[in-house]
Length: 595
Image: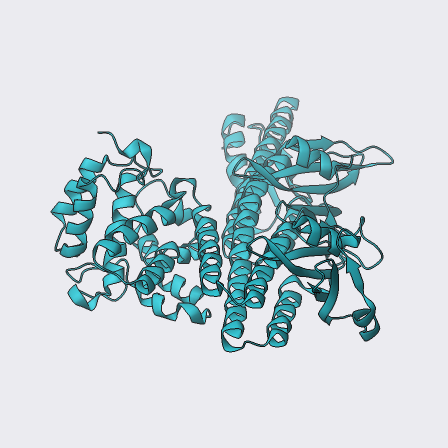
């Protein structure tokens, strides 16, 4: 017996899917219960773009064939929805994979290239431009790619222009333009992280087309991941740069401590300046006895004739103005002469001008940044102290503390909930150590260790560091590695070898159940035991994404409860006494001081 049309239509869907799965792309269905006396009818079915199957309908009535045709069209709609869902799932999978890759990429240029390449592939764009706005250096990193050509990276100065990238940076909103017969479709998306536009992504499509809502949605998700990854890469780069500057300051200080020769000191000053600022030439000019004329005492990249003949009176040229006004000057390339960007900083001792440090012409052809001007000023301060033969160690200590605070702030900046954490832990630790009778040298070491105790968190992924709930076992194991990461980062700085054990063991418990080494009692360095009390107290009294900070009274109860098990008894007793005496209240976060 022949199947009824209803039965046949029901089986049609099943049979067509079966044919597709088997790869035949063809199926035949009988739709009429009457004897066949007419020719079969073939219907092509579009499964997905570029992929079709054929239905052969056997029947002798117009009704049966109409049912067949209606079913075919319904199937095409099903396949269209199915194909769209599969494409969306594939896009989400690729975005997830990209997010994982971006979290593991810490070098900025590599990161920008991966973002640009993926964005083009995601929407099959013919060209793309990724612009990263470097607020610190006041410049743009622009990565462009067209067709199959490799990406090209250029660096330019920030300019309030009227192009799409400038519009995206200023407005912070998406912009989509449809193409016509002569113009390609364009999509511009700002890259926003922590309420700040850090860059923009512009893609070019086909003429007479437009980027779809689905593509816009996918690229918007991509832009969010990309912006956060760029922000983190910039932070990592900032930490690396500050560590390099710190090593340079340390090397310069060692040179000054080894010699009383002005020539040796200036030679080291110029070498470090050229290396750190990546400049072509530099010179040190000192005031002559008449206190009105500057002459070059040592130079790099200048001819002997220039060195011998250059004499500048106060108030003349860049160097004379800096010496007269006692303020550094930074000239971008467009305002300087043919030698390119230049900076000049005064050599000052007790507000007395000794001379100036001149630096010219970036190797990259770009401009010196405000950060580089600041670094040159710090180098000049060290040189001025050496030249004056007085107050060197005090000034170097201030420079190191400033650098330590800058590093600590760079770490705390990754999470607004930990803002100021390193500074508070340092102040708590110093109070305890002073009461315990630490020497000035021991206090300085503890200050550096406390400021840098969390520097290893720069290598912890955002997904773990910012997670609002409880960490999984694997996530907690990763978080527990931050003391080891911190030691690895600071290992190259020879001046801090003595503080590495304090940084490494500040999460040990007095009863031996801490990490990373499971040390106990006096086996834990006293400095680390002090930092443990200070660190935990600040963690308890500070807000976190998943809870509000404890009142001081509640934190005191916790310290008393875990005294002798988690916390060193002596350090805990001293800290509790300091709280009782009111020595801690002005350091604690304000909202944590009330019950």
